[in-house]
Image (cartoon, rainbow, N blue to C red):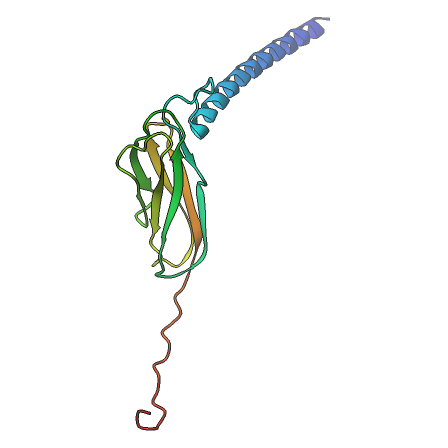
Length: 168
């Protein structure tokens, strides 16, 4: 009987701890969900549109197969759907081969603009790079991604040989 009582006490304690942890995790997830919602669309926890709101048409660009030494510049269009000017404080590529460009002036509500990204296509092979953008719309950075596969440039074509007709 003592063993049963001891086992019952331990089991009750374990269930209580588990329930308390589950309740804590649920509350934490709920707060995290609201925070994530605010990051993704710029809205506050009460779904207000106050403040700047940076909305992209897309956040990933797939170059597909691209020739070595070809134009590696691509654009990420976005709009400020908020109620206050959007300021891009900083944008940085994940390496020196990925160089972003962005508007330095505030983007007014309703205004559209682009983040430019230049990838160095001298490097052959698959790539996946990112650009982190810091704005006044969110405390968390916005991450844009580029990917693709740079194909080696074909070796030089043989020079034209004369046709033996003396230049004709």
